[in-house]
Amino acid sequence: MSEYGDGTRSAHAGLPPAVPGEPFLPGPVFAAPYHLDPAAGPAAAANGYGRPDNQTRRLLESAIGELEGGSALAFASGQAAVTAVLLSLLRPGDSVVLPTDGYYPVRGFATSLLSELGVKVTFAPTGGPHPDYTGVRLVLLETPANPGLDVCDIAVLADRAHAAGALVAVDNTTATPLGQRPLDLGADISLASGTKALTGHSDLLLGYVTTRSPELLESLKAWRNTTGSIPGAFDAWLAHRSLLTLDLRLARQSANAAAVVTALASRADVTGLRWPGRPGDPSYAVASAQMRRIPGVVAFDLGSAERVARFLSASRLVAAATSFGGVHTSADRREQWGDDTAPGFVRLSCGIEDAADLVADITGALDAS
Ligand SMILES: *Cc1c(COP(=O)(O)O)cnc(C)c1O
Image 1: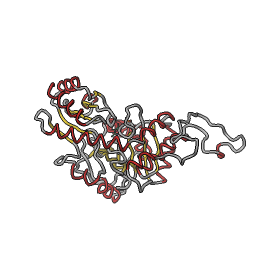
Image 2: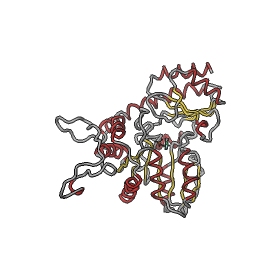
Image 3: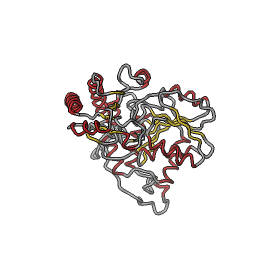
Image 4: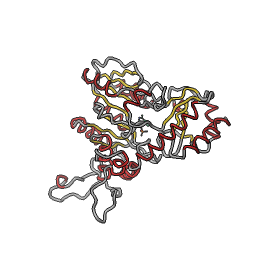
């Protein structure tokens, strides 16, 4: 499939070979135990018990693996995926570098639990400067970073990390595997929350980890099997079904973001506008060189929490909601969750509505607030 374009690859990702009378995407298989061969036991078949073995989840994993260009493991949520990487790789005395401006529950997890376990945790901003990686075991990058949308050069940082003997994991949530393929850029691990744009219908939680290293794959698989952090069969199936339209959804979201950014850029009552696809944005140069498409997520500041509330109340198309990447446009005032952003900071996630409707709605709501 790798020779095809994004639309073809998304629509066919992970689908089994055609079998007359069978569906394109087989329905979810619900099983805790499976029938065993009475004599040969688990050795006789691929499925013995639901925690390690589920055919619906394996199909989803082959889809994600095809898109990322590695072997994939699905997890119950993005947090389950990130913490699986951190906890399975890091030991007391190890050193890890995380993004200052990355997903805030990951930062919280690192400063509390990882530090208590004796892991040395340091932070570096996604936009740089990046530290010397001597003595570091793992570098976690997040690009574009959520919610500030700074971008870093994965290939350059992966080279530097590898020269120092460190492993590199990239949180690919905001970009999705159609936006960039961190494994192609030299990362050892590409992981993400599938809750966001990857599945895009705001109806499930999912995480995944991909790698080309058989050793890392085995240790992550063992970690997942012992901790039990698997997605259920129905969520895995729903995720796969949603994934098939990834190319279409991202294309519209990105086009909508471009239109919204153009409208916002001319307004004096909107400050701190950030979108990696906008010429002049601090992330523009690296994003243009590194990314195959720009996500539909935009950041800006409306000055106060009260104005954000008025804006959201006045809008008919922008839902007040956390998370992002869904088919419906949504906006989140990040400070209300404890993210260290300004009170008026908004992360706007453009959905798949018509650009003209969205721009008119957002402009009208800003005028009214
Ligand atoms: C949402 C998010 C996560 C966590 O994913 P969940 O599916 O909510 O557990 C991790 N990293 C980033 C960048 C995210 O946006």
